[in-house]
Length: 320
Image (cartoon, rainbow, N blue to C red; front, top):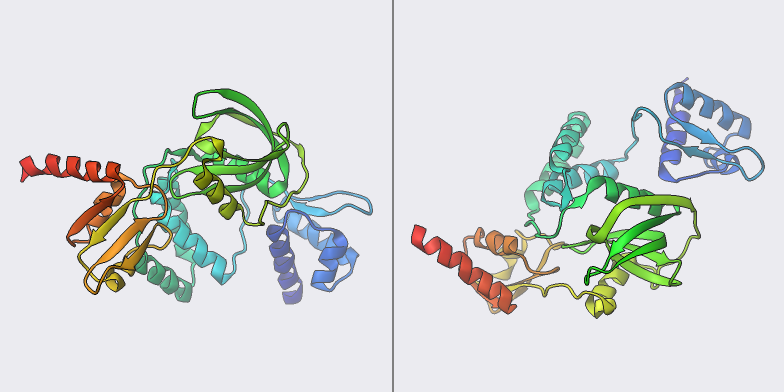
């Protein structure tokens, strides 16, 4: 009985790991026969897991969607990653996710073993982040696009360019990328026969999911690097705002320990000063966050950031 239960858990873990498996692949991974796989699949179905099967030689198994969410299997590293991600979700630019993240985190931390809870707390205490001023993204839209990327389904949507020109796009999505300011969909545009990056906040109306598309390799193999290169090049569309740079009257080491490398870099400027540079475009939140470090600040660039700092100081001076 113990062996059977362990095998069921292993089978469930495999089905959650990949979109689709053939019966032969599952049998080889679990070192059992195809008949045993069929019996185990039936047992998972009786427990409420919607395992779908396609008949024939080329058929396979996939974990489908159901009326209820069955338990998920997470290894130690995955559980820690999810918990830390939920803790930082309140600072993300996804509309309506803050309260949901708190509820999900409470459920997860309730069942975390003590050894993992200590790791999550250590990571949370050692990591700081400042918010971004990017436009909020609808969570349902983001989930739909991410699922299309995972499953290889084509999507159609209405897109508005920077000049307010609207167009209909037929794409084969590859990845969803967050630049630190905007969310982007990286996809192959079927009508233009080329790769395109789409600002997700400029997708209008309903996204329609279609048939399975072709699996394509992003140029260079790294979706985030490709999107970053398109942003820097302007890609014939919109350049992003410049990064912000400030000079703090403090050594680089202590400041580096208080700033997440995801959002900014810290470089020494002599023994007693350092330069903090945002990885994405500057924001007023960056000014507020650096002010909370309780160190003298010199705002360096761009000029728009310098002006924003002056406005904030002018507003605070009368109150003082």
